[in-house]
Image (tube, rainbow, N blue to C red; front, top):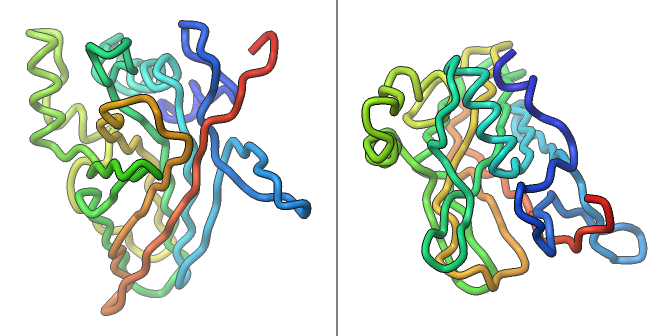
Amino acid sequence: MGLTAALAPGVAAAAAKPYRIAGANKDEAGKWQAAEMLEQTRAGVSFQIQFLEPEAARRVLKNTLGRDVDLLPGRSGESRRGYLVFVLQIANTSPLDVTFNPTQARLSTEKGDMEFALDYTALYDASRLLGPEGPGLEEMSTALFDRSLTIKPEGSVRKLLAFPAPREDKYKTLEVRLAEVNVGPSSVDAVFAFRKFPMSPGE
């Protein structure tokens, strides 16, 4: 319940931003269109991924942890680059065990930025900044992909996947690559395109 209650489509950040980040699909005319959720299936493994604005990610954490913590804040000018957070669901419809290691997941931009997903050590460092109110490793593991896990046939997992944001806010496109997801003895990659879309009045 914790990872679904806060997922309101089109949630904007508290500060008025000139853009929002969303999944990107091209229409028949070749024009990019925003998609709240991106989906792919590879070798019997289904992936669903959605970008969350900082306030939405904070609400998900609150629902999961049972208290409000600003563990993964968004960008604040040039002084704090913050994090980019996605909710990811992996469902295994294959007859084989699936192993997902989030440390192999990476985020890149057309500007050449590249960041790996936060693992438990990076999340622990972020939690320490919150002092005694910061969540522990086991708490964070219930809400975030932070270490390798195995999904049995017919099983599924839904958690947050977080990356350090690019150092500069000059990029236009993002790519999330879930690399080397093991399906039995073989592996697959799933690649998802995101981009900045202008915000319409009222968003």
